Image 1: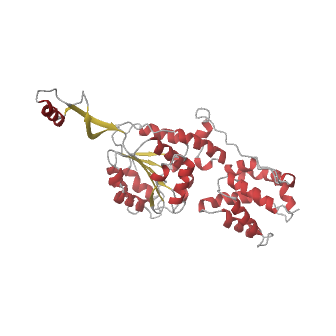
Image 2: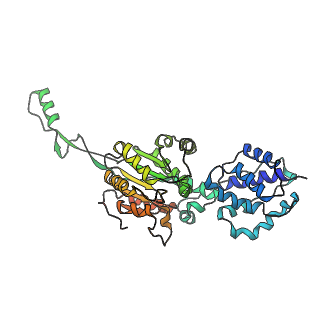
Image 3: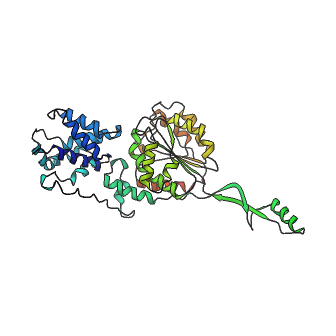
Length: 388
């Protein structure tokens, strides 16, 4: 019996479990494409399935690992693929952890249960206090199940940014200043001496502005952080989110939808440069020129999320970062490369930006986000220059 269609469908399920968004249409297209090539040539099969299943550059490496593990049996007999579960155990250390976990629970296709429905994958949600391993797990190495658990935790995070004084005043019985206008108005109404009216400064949360890098090197982190940004966008007012790769895109309105999946789907349709190159200097220049005066008023706090790897070699990046820092209360740079103990600021982009930020922090797991929340609660602290 020809088991090729079953194996292609099973391979597509594995790819879905590791994060590739595949549907029935792509599986049908893959089956049709395989009928037009020589199945005896492994490279032809690889690039045919790659052309159908891979839609973004960041997915290519994950596809290659899954393909090598799934189709490595060098035999023309389709029946031989049935026994691959036992043969693949020895190659577990050579693939990523996400690929290994996706294959761990797979069941080989069988003609005996062709009509049986595909078993549902249940994502077990762990609590914050009982998930120490998940809290320290790097976003880039998480399995599909761990990503689902982490997304649930990200939705619950809140930013306790304290209120700051503004230049506006409001009537207050025990205010620190006398409200001369209100006092004169009250005296004209009665014609008699009255008590002095007082006013006090209005206190409110400062705006939060987020500039997030969505280039290929940041894609895995950006996707997880968008769930966090969606949660805080719907939890408080005056949150502005911008994504940039080779261009700058304002996605604040898209993230305001209450359903995170719908919100991220809208973001995906709006952003045109996901997983591409990075032009940090050009993106900051556009923000400073077109958006800075609109969103950075009243002591805004700015989060800059990027690895600092600039395609333009840091051209103009120092001046634009300095201008951004001077326009906000605090500029906090979140860089996933700080997860490495031996990190050094060698790339030109990182060296250009580093002297002009107030905080330089890692952002690669749930614990790093918890530390960020603690940092944001200290926005009243004076600026602390970061050593290059």
